[in-house]
Every structure is written in structure tokens, then in C-alpha cells.
Length: 439
Image (cartoon, rainbow, N blue to C red; front, side, top):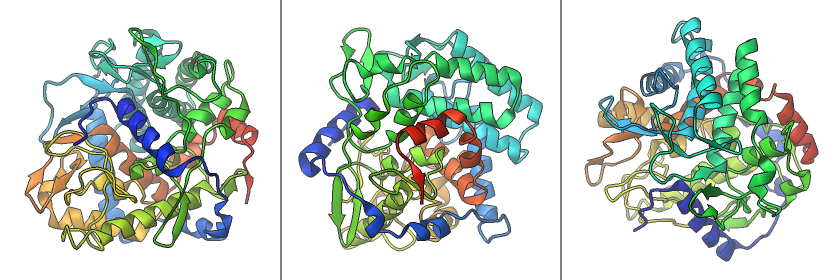
């Protein structure tokens, strides 16, 4: 059973499996999913729809987490906390902090907290990230002490988690249109030495430590890496060549009538970049990435339903398996094909992170959980994972799991995160350099 504390180590293992199983095939999905249909699927919905109460509850609860489980002195957000509230742990995650900065913008738009207090928290966070947090060539350690910003234990410098943080940083720059926030945000983004992270190659390295230098693994196969490459290509100071966009592979999977680009990896890899980057009505020379994520979500639902014979809890309104806690530690699981020791556990963020992709199906799952599984709901939203067949409920909530659901809920409702983040000209420039065009 897989029990690895480092997300980078888990991704490295999955990348090896993906390359061995699927190779480096590229594909064009325009013949698989009609581009026009994705325009309809991704239309944002007015708040008068029948799910407004549920979505309000989800987003308010998530704001509670990112407000209460961040250090007021640094703004760094805890990686996880106990479902019943604060605990003594001080490990923050830069990825959770990136989601948290974005959640603060959503909270301001929905008036969950006074604007001045939110702006003060954003300014505190950005100032700390720029002036006091541990940083290597502009990249951050995956885990830091939330009160001091010091490297937590033997954490690695993480390129992908730095990218998630930067998405939150640039979201604040564009949303608040405040001179101080804008200057801080750009200073954090501009100091990142993307060329250093190439480490002499064509694709970006995954991680670095002062003890061992660069890890051998690279971001060289499709996953959540798109935001990383677009941030690097669009850099105003130390960009990487636009040719790096074509340097990573796009493995092709066929499953039960579905054909799409995917590694052998959990569903979240089809969600995270889409939380900020608006791929609607755009494609590059390879595919329509929104259409690809729609297919991935449909295939994942079909995969879960196919397991109902072994795990009768899975059904039309109860599906979704992605990286999460388990009674035996943190695991990578999901499919297709089957990954990890699947045992009937449900991960709310698996379906929840796909709200805009397959909205009615996903919202049916989230409503079912909210109304019929009270122990799966906490002050901070949905529990990280639980298994009704065994009676196991995770004692923790996890920041990135809460964050992806809240951000995708807002994109479904208003498109706020997409429209605001895409106002950063560096991202539009990067997409043009990568060969994106309108469909």
C-alpha cells in the first residue's frame, strides 16, 4: 500500500508508471468531443439556480478554513487541520496558500468578510512571501512553518506547488487593482528563475533540495503541469522557451468508449490548472484541454460505477476517487485504469473539482453527501475522504482539497476566477506563444 508523505515523490512514481503504460502518444481530440459543445457545458450559471444554497454553504465553509487556519502574522495557510477546528500543527503548504489567496478574492466578491480586513490579510501574506519566507531562486519550499516561514522538516523546493501559489498571487494582483498588492505580486512573480528550474533540460524539474540538488524527475507528461509551463513561458524576467510547451508528452488512453489525454494518475490532474486558466473556446496544436477534462470526468464516473459490484456504495450520486487520506495514510488512487488500493472510499474533492465540467452530475453527488452523510460535512466543508462501508471518516480536512472545490464552484457560478486571472497579460502572452488559438 502506497504511503508517501511527499507529493513530489508520489508524482514521480506515477510519472514512471504513466510513461511505461501509455508511452508518449499525442492526440487531437476535436474528433472525439465537439468544441461547440464545450461552450455550452462551460456556460456560467446565474445564482438563481437550484444549487445556490449548497454552493453558498460550500464556499462560506471553505472561506472559514482559509481565514481561520492561516497565520495572521504571515498569511501562510495550514496544509491540513482537524475537522473539529484548529489543532497544534504548524505545517503550512504553499499550494494551500495559493488556493487561499484566491479564496480571499472570492470571499471579498461575496462579502464574507469586510474588504479592508481581506486586503490586510492579502497584503500581509504577499509581504511575507516577498521579504521573509524561505525561497530558492524565487521558488518556495512545499512545506513551511506557518508562523516563521522556515523550511518544514526536509521539505523540497517544489516547482508545481510554487506555480499554484503564484496563481493565487497573480489572482490578487488582478482582482484588487491596488498599487501595493500589484507591486508585491509582480515582485514575487518576477524573481522566479524559471531557467534555473530547467536544469539544463527542455522540461522543468519537479523539485530541489539543498542536500541533494535537483531530483531526476521532471514535468514531462501531461498532468496539472499546464499552469506551471504557462507561468514560466509568460515570465517578464526569466522565461523559458515556448518550445517547452511541446516538450512534454500527451499520453492517450482509450477506456469504455472514451478517448482522452491522461497519465495513469488521479482525477485532480485534470482539474488544478483549470481552476485559474480559462481554456474555454481555445486549443493548441494538440487538443482542446477543456474537452479533454470533460471526457476525463465522464470516464472517471463510469469507472467508479463499474466498481459497484465490489463496492456497493458507489452509484449515480456517489462517486469520485482521487488522491486523499485513508486509514493507512495518504494514497494515490482512482482510475481508469485502477490506481491504488480502492476500497469504497469516496473523496468529495474528486467530483467537486469537476463542477464546471459535468455540473449536474457533480452537484448531485455533493448534494447527496451534504444531505445524507452529516459526518462528511465540517465547519470547513467536506471531509477529505470517508468510507461508508467501513465507517471510517477522515479526522482531517486538507487545504488543497477544499480549495479546488471552492474555486471550481465559483467558476461554475460566475467565472470570476477565470476572468480575473486571465486579465494578467503574462498568461495571455504565454498562451499565444504556446500556440493557442480560438475555436
